Image 1 (cartoon, rainbow, N blue to C red):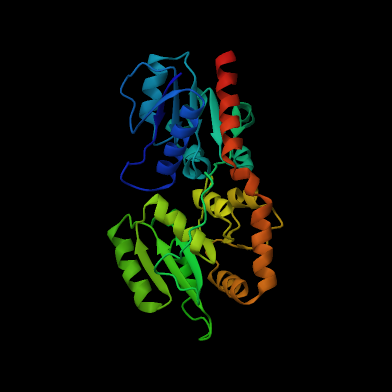
Image 2: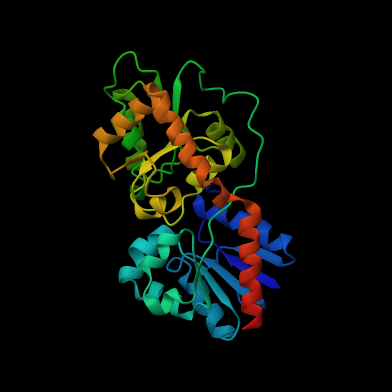
Length: 322
């Protein structure tokens, strides 16, 4: 099929939507389709549209539905869709009703949909192509330290400076160092980054990285810290699972749906003190650190590329046969 893949993300901004779009392009091409990625739909004749984000892609979704009301339309729901926009945006809700199928990126996402919408929703976890672990550490890491990695563009949903706050007053003998990859999306966050580095000598802001270098950083880190207030399905978590680096994360529903209720590395959103204690425990308690690694290893199968490719293959077959 000729497939138009709509993503509201700019090609020069490395974020979750951009990574998801590139991965889907590869998967859909692998199973025999012709795929083009665009920010907006421009009336091209295609057999199928897949849109990331029900609200931000609304204009493209509306235009495609007007031109091809009987062609399949698939919407991949993001975190801001599930936990914000479909609660109050008429446009986002209209997109959901026009869709032939809805994709959520983890099981809990189904719970945010009404029963009639749930019937046309499918769960497809995001996968990560297997990569060899790097033979050398990321150059800014020291093997003598406990290197905690934060990967988050600086916007409120990510609570991106929480780890910097949690590590301001650690014991002097702690070897924890925090490294942050991400792009500040406002002048306010540029100022907050500068202040965080002044207040905490353990916090190091690295700026934006390429995808490949980000993977090297994950594989080199002792731990990945995810502080999000909401997520549809975390690319960072998927990357950490695939590369074998344990995580400490907020106990928001989407992340619990991936790691499981019994995972030992959760802290409540914005709970700086609990995060601090977990980081220290991971650094100093080998048994706890191994429990984190074991908990991640248990769910690594969810990010297997062959699994995601089969689910997309089955979905397209289902749509063709409708």
